Length: 173
Image (cartoon, rainbow, N blue to C red; front, top):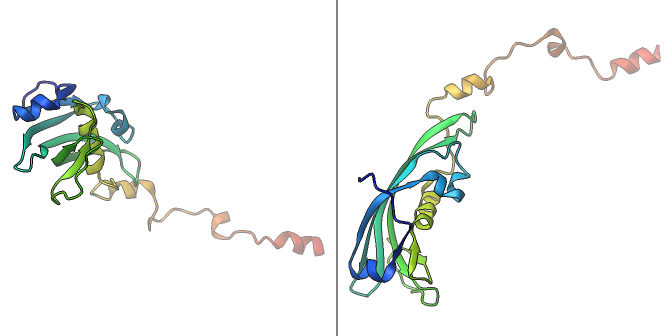
């Protein structure tokens, strides 16, 4: 993967006509919707995209994205590094023309302009491939929290709590 930056946009007319292949990286800080779900927005997403057309004249975008991001563990709320990888298989449609029958391996991407903003496409794919629940594989984070079966020392007051009716008993005497 080259160390170059991904272009901000591509001209779809040219990209599909010339069957362009684009690779590069996007900084996580340039993906604000995705960065909101991260603990740390430092890092990059590596992207490879191929633009082509098929025999039905559908405009295909295929590629691969990968990133290492830091999210919060949902057990202990400490940072957790997660490897994200996803294959991109999209068909680009104009806003007024959407094909009803699409092969199952493809998703649709709608763009009414000739400029396709690549960061938006990458951001959407990252959001879709993010795991729903993130937590440390080992259960050390559970041990640090002192719950779920871990014994906690109890004071005498906690072991023998005073009955709420004890005060009434004293008043009665």
